[in-house]
Image (cartoon, rainbow, N blue to C red; front, side, top):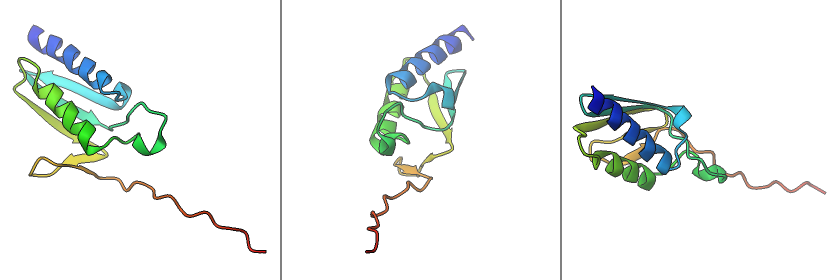
Length: 105
């Protein structure tokens, strides 16, 4: 159990080092298996980057799997999912910028 507590602490450090909002995620470790649930939310001022991107999720996954003692990592995220090939797919439609309408004269 003590190993799981230490692994949970290291996993949380990695999540915050990747600029993710830890308050939006639930991180559990059971016998070396990390489980992450919730919503990916990056701590950034840029609105279009707040939901993260596939490359940042790959980095997070690589960092977590690189921890000594990790037997696996599973994700149950509200706004992202992993396809069978390992690619990350956003499950929420990102708003597209609407062209500015010019007032009619």
